[in-house]
Length: 78
Image 1 (tube, helix red, strand yellow):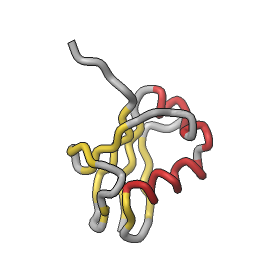
Image 2: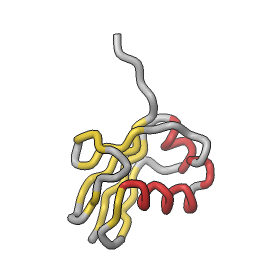
Image 3: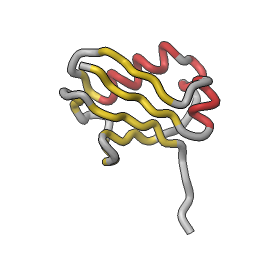
Image 4: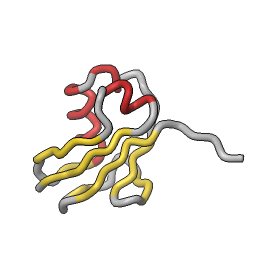
């Protein structure tokens, strides 16, 4: 399956890209994050949330279809 990975804010700066396509098998969010941290070591010390198809999900969420995954830096409301 192919995922569209989008990086925002400091995460785009850490990876030096805003978006990429990733071919992968069905995986949990935690497995995907581990793969991305191995590919982009600067992500290791960053705090961020994950959205799959524009819905915030936890790290146990299983991604088993083509999806848009967004890595979102911390943000404040007001």
